[in-house]
Image (cartoon, rainbow, N blue to C red; front, side):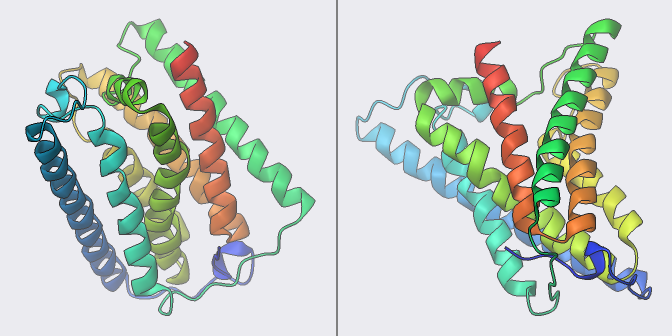
Length: 255
């Protein structure tokens, strides 16, 4: 996969006008959200039709609006489609010149993944210390989805969801800010956006618990973004994301 020359250590791009960058990014987020929502609606209709036809899809999940847990991995197809749509739309407008792979980059990918997982564990320990709930609002749903369809859930959450998310947040949004000469602002905004798509609302928890959960996801977005700005390789960032999710799923399922 590709990346960005300006992000990979070459001469910094001259600063462009800020409002077009914000405007295009907002349009992209709305488009991506529409695709994700549309796929969710189609998945709900499909699963509802199967259940009406007598297919056993497992117990309903109140947190999913009565949908079965299988809705989770199926709906994640929307994330991949959203990322692919934005990449296809903007790849000519956002040309890439990634750094080549090297042993040092491979070690950096593994190191970033380990550091981010350690940060997530540290945030969990902090939440336990201050007495707030440590589980994100989506973790119980993911556990139920794994119980219903383990192979599909692992494939979607560990492999395909990272591809979609990195296409949207790093390859398109962060890339655009870096190309406009504003990588720091892009890094901050994409990290916050990455956190908010995972934990958009407190979901009945205290504000402190929600803030610490947001901080956990924001730290992941920050790490992935810094790696992208350093090497300009989307595949490197996707690999780091896959490693983080794989370790996280392992800890969730065994812990």
